[in-house]
Image (cartoon, rainbow, N blue to C red; front, side):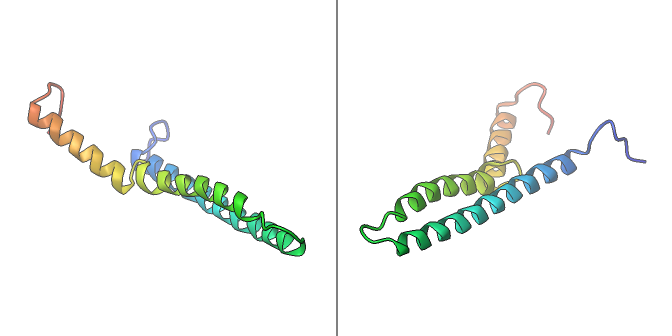
Length: 100
């Protein structure tokens, strides 16, 4: 029987990563819909094209969001690599309280 008072760490991590990825997918979808609308509005008007500026600014924010989700969250490639390196360094120094 599963003890509900102590959540499984793998389940917690999976839920956290799934939530972060869902947030990224929602962010990307809203980015596309809004910026397509801005491009349509921009194309209807005369004069200088302005829709590229919000696209670039928001695109930078979306890129940072994606980098955090893919690289830095627990379970991600970069986070796991850094964690393994730190574990190895601590074990090499023979830190007390570190299990092998």
